[in-house]
Length: 434
View: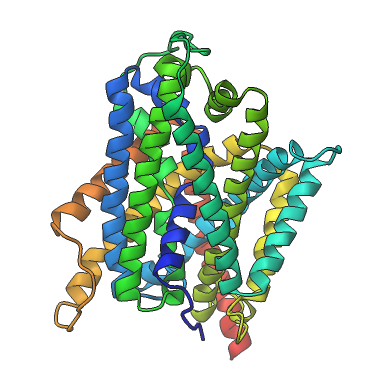
């Protein structure tokens, strides 16, 4: 039995930590290159923020109506079918999350290695980071949340420090990285793919629905607050990049954060940005372990995976076996997967489709609960706002598929493979039960 331990501030911090990962330190160059001009560049970030806010409002109602442990799986299972929910989780939790966490752990290790004075094997350091996070979350959901709160506030403080430094920056007027934009495509949707990835993450709060105290009030407030703060910080950071490097400088600088901080602080900037990105990656991994275990809880509760995944510590509220499984899976992927960029190619198409599917459950739950005395948060401008949100998400998803057809087809293949896996697992567990 899961006992709620997270309040409004915890929920807001979780949303910010899920949204403000490492994307803002990399994707602006992709957006600038696709946009081709300042108007489309900043419009992309503003539109992305509005879309994220729309999504946050929709997910806030879903979470308030159905504060279930396991989020995505339980929601899709109840609204559609357990097999469909399992197939989404099969790809999103067991396969893609393992790849993403491994890539993120390697990234964190790469930047941490720049801060220590002796040579170290990056993959072994990544494994040490995973082991430390396993121990933190093994101690309990509240311990993991307390560590996350500290890391997120530290990360935001460092980002605000960069913003202030950028605003007071007075250069010579010549941007240090100012080569012509490689392709002035003026492609708003192309830029929105990168923007959407940078804003995504808030939807994963659904996996912690049952851990939030007074979810009808705290979930909506936490999601909306977290997205709002993240959107403001993103706009300010991008203006900081623009003030320091100019649009052409942003477009021609894949390591945008590193180049910007180097202009502000010289070689010392390299150490500063390494620390910021390490903290961001570490915080993302921490919150991922917090919410991911609850997806296993939901599947075990429905008897489609072994019951050991459901066992929860009485005081800690952590699922020790599920945490060990997630950690081991991530460590395996550390040694078989190479780069963060490769992981993103595999993730983006299916992630957007999953968000659209889960967002659509708001229509089903509203219809089923219309005769109930529901007094929680409701999406405003319903049904227009969720319809517009889902259409935009599907357009972004289609663009992501067209841009990387092989990764899109691989995602579909993994998804379809989930059905026979579901049937086999269900039969094995039913035979054992009988």
